[in-house]
Image (tube, rainbow, N blue to C red; front, side):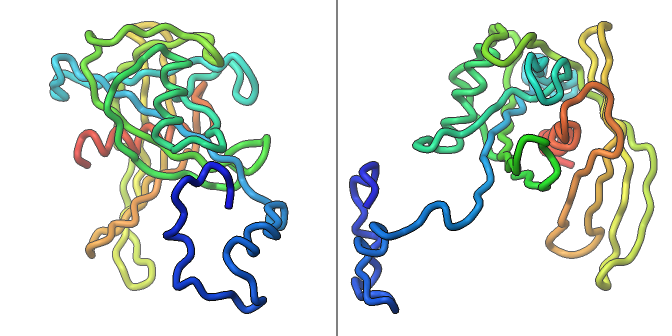
Length: 233
């Protein structure tokens, strides 16, 4: 059993041997971790802020500017790679602190994004976390892989909406324009395709970037997803 497991009795199951006649310890000693090609795991954190924690006064989002490839010079969510002996939420909070200086906030898991074409380096699956804070209580300082960190005003405009039928269910297809601007400075945007079930218990809501300007990778879709979560949409 790997050394980092201090209490692993729960993994023994009924204690019987497997079809090859091996105990759990024998199975693990001979287990080949290179048998399957595995993806890399990353985390991203969406830190939304409302003035006096009032979303009616508008939402702002903390973004960084990437100082390295890929998407160098583009704006992105603070985040990075998960270490082998690190839980996902711990990694998200660590990366957030390293890149923006923001610490000691409460986050909640938003979703996982795993399109195999989402990163040119390798297959990367990211788990996104979302937070809602009071901007005035935080001090932001860019460091590590971030060339810059700042607050951006968030707006969401519905461009089009159509209804169609798939697998016997009525579904909605929308195009949203996500706009981010830093108090009159640089404005960036992403057009995002949103699909979801109109009827039924499960909405199966998906987000996909169809056009983007200076927003890294699929972060426009992740941001809109988080924005809708905060707004209760």
